[in-house]
Length: 326
Length: 250
Image 1 (tube, rainbow over the protein chains, first blue to last red):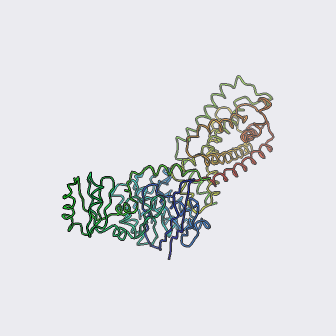
Image 2: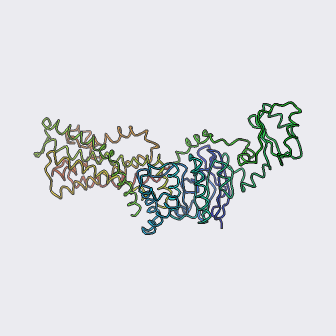
């Protein structure tokens, strides 16, 4: 069964198109990732699917419910963990959960039982009476995930779930997310700009850039499109090297910012041959590395740009456009 | 009702926990009461007074002041919820905006009435005689209406504001004029004739006069007129607040 169906969904803020006619379909029980740099349109997509933001055009259905016709129906079916924290710091963990349970009209007995269960699931039962303002970033995230699951949604949205968390906590959270998906069969749609996160967690990934989906497939398939191996060479002559090296085993060579990215089959066998080709022409090589392709290479391949984490400029531009919508 | 209660419960819990807010927002009314009350008591003669002195005249005004400030602030607190992200949590839940707005309003009004009650109790210690039970109830009825009316106004304002930067503007051009033109500090009859209609349009004037009627047994406006005027203003404010909050985005 289809959990989420998105059909040419578009959102404009004035002249700026944040989400540009994206379409995708997510089957029930899948972990689906929206991967892209800050400002690519991930959060805007989530906001539309969770009924916080009206689409400019296009349609979307969650469990067959039209997001523009039955907003309450959609809201009951989804749980959401926002990119920015959304807990009440002046309340305890238990009270935050209780507030949520009451908003979703869960009867008292069931509510109290489930709050206990969920807090145990995220290992916060010892701290349930503590005010949230005393919690660390990781604990807050876990509490938000527990809260998002309290009303037993069939679809869970996670907007940058591990943003700003330390590596250990991230690993921990990934395990929670995978367990949830396996044990409860919850469909999960997560946004991230961490390549490793998307690679590790997602069944399928849509790479989104400037409001458009540029590629969509399983992480393995996406990477295999780039080639089996990647050799990257840093050199002052990067441009000429990229133009000149040619061999049947080279899938492609591209040049970005003084780096040649060579996509090829079995790099180990061809490394010497490759170096020979470059050495003959007397080019300088500053550094060289061989690795398996990552989703970073996939992104680079499809957009021609590197996806840097500090690309805050785009996010700030978004924020400036976001607030007004009357 | 369950949803309204949920939001009310949150407001009250937060209020009870923030001791600094309770004390802080009592500071200004207490200061006004003591400084003006004792400072001017000997100097000021209320025109057409039926025996009460200036301190007695002032108490209902200061109670109204405490309720006014607390309720508007509690409405404006929605901006904090917006900035700290909590508003999203309520907006994405399967509940109507009207329920959220009403819950926030009654929550704010409750805390405001408690603040007003503090002033009322305090004033008993500085020479206000204990009024009859019906008098008390009348005073609380008007305090509640002031609380609801201005909590709704606070929400209306907050729905149109992005952050707390405009707060000073609201303070100087909304809250203080409402307070100053309300007959809280002086009888409205003493004002220049052209200002009087303005004070009669001010919901707080009717609130002050209503509380004054309850506590002192006298008022410049007939209490039923005040009740009708304040009740109508409250209804209008809820409609405006609900409308603007419906359009507010996070």
